[in-house]
Image 1 (tube, rainbow, N blue to C red):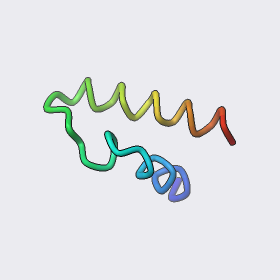
Image 2 (image 1 turned 120 degrees about the vertical axis):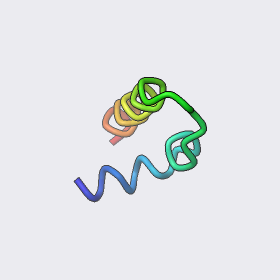
Image 3 (image 1 turned 90 degrees about the vertical axis):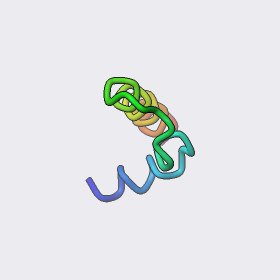
Image 4 (image 1 turned 180 degrees about the horizontal axis):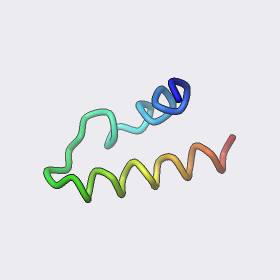
Length: 40
């Protein structure tokens, strides 16, 4: 779990939390997680 959050922090959108709504932030996290999983 810790490694996954460290990988997600590499994505600027997730690390800085630009989105104001929780659902938009969650969708960004899911997309970043999918990219991190797919590229790994």
